[in-house]
Length: 244
Image (cartoon, rainbow, N blue to C red):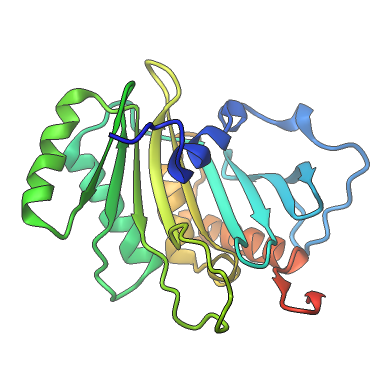
């Protein structure tokens, strides 16, 4: 088995921190201008190397820690938040991931792969394969520490000769924070984030443990607009021309 401490899945999960599980009002950068139209309940948290911008987005009392990466090849939107899940159950995972993928890729009926991390090893399954699917369901009995469902990157459409990363184009997962709390997280391309629709943002709101909004339709539009606004404020870098 490969070491779970040395791969891009582990690196991604380890990069998430537990500040998504509390009100982050005391962690806002001082004197930070937020260059988006919808500034209400959008708090700037951190800037890394002038390419990664981290915010706390609040919608209906739900907090989403959100990172916008503007890198040319790795441009992305990452969101993580406290989950309503407190145990990993196969049926609940199937329902959640089906809803998320249907919202993210309407009508494409994609079947993800999944990476499970345990204390001493990791296992990977292609859920399109019947036999691997059976093994995947049995693996839940071993109490995984995290589950990461992903769609491999489609390299079509990239300029010829560009060294495209093998990092998946879409990831959605669950990770234990402690014995009682679970984090959910999502990573998609910067381009896809800039086009996020209200159906997808509604799925995220449904899954956030802190969401107490009275009108999820309106709140979904609010969350969508915040994400699109951040992507517009922090555009992805382009070949030869810097940022747009």
